Image (tube, rainbow, N blue to C red; front, side, top):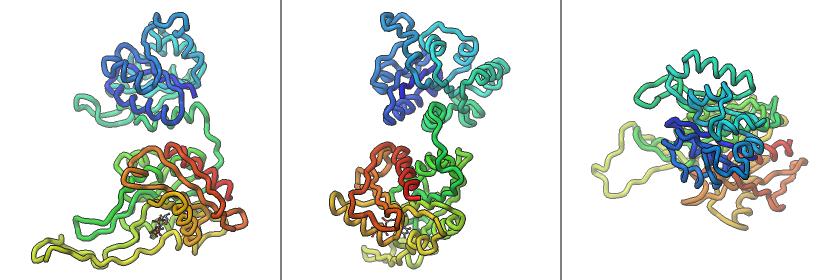
Length: 409
Ligand code: CTP
């Protein structure tokens, strides 16, 4: 998509750098138009480097290319983030004294604004009226959120998170098909933690980002989504709770995850086990913090195996229910395929999404590659065939996963 990102003069402009980066990663062509005010916060070279396109603010650059209208005419989507009170006022009045102003008048593309300003300015009757005018003209508004503002104030006025703005704007530009409407979906995400004593645990590096992407993709496509969250990274957890379409249940240990998931599965049409479950828990959790006193330099923890949650779900499967497993594997090539095929068979899941991981791969990243191993419509394994491989943002691979689930159903 050809996306124009207008940046206006607010401190939140620094966050728009990651908004532009997310769009580029999503494969979009991005042209940034900062106002003069925006450049006081983030400089022109940053916008050029991040968008990979020339950037100008003036009406009088690039005149032969009729740049003052060309970007607006080409745009499939225009995002203004942050949108200051001043810019909203100019937009409402149709003022075109800079490149962003002319672009906005020249475009018929959907326009999304993400306001950011102090609460008093947001509540001012002038701003309220301008927002009403813009809404009436079809401009879509995201935020502002309630939260900490510059200078120690807090209240409504904070720009929405870049990730939410991108999701909202792309949805406005190309409404997603509602092909999961009517389906109840349970997704587990994150990683369980098994306590050793009151302050320590056995855990893993899962952030919950891929599981959240699966949940958000399902919600966007119309599903009723229940997310069972095991120790998500703070920003991932915050994104989940900010989304009114997603019901979240927090769990800690594998045992808690098992009981929440088994409960959720009794109503679910599809269960996706994206959570990294600890294979073992500590046999006897110490009530008091373990100390090194009177130790001999080594410590042995006795571990007992946790139940295989997904295998349990498969055994108790409701008629017509689809069960999806995830597997994080450090093997590569043929060994990876063989291991994954055995795992899909052993777990009895309809679809196994396999993730190659390593010290520097698979975790805390936005991009991912998944291999999708499915059974065919007759319940026969397809594992000897070459499985589908999808690469992209975690959101893109999540959508590919839902496409594969729909094909199975
Ligand atoms: N899983 C589960 N319960 C467990 C362990 C894993 O439900 N006790 C689920 C995971 O959520 C995932 C799938 O099983 O969807 C595969 O997880 P993985 O850790 O790769 O499988 P393991 O059974 O632990 O296999 P192994 O340790 O032999 O690789």
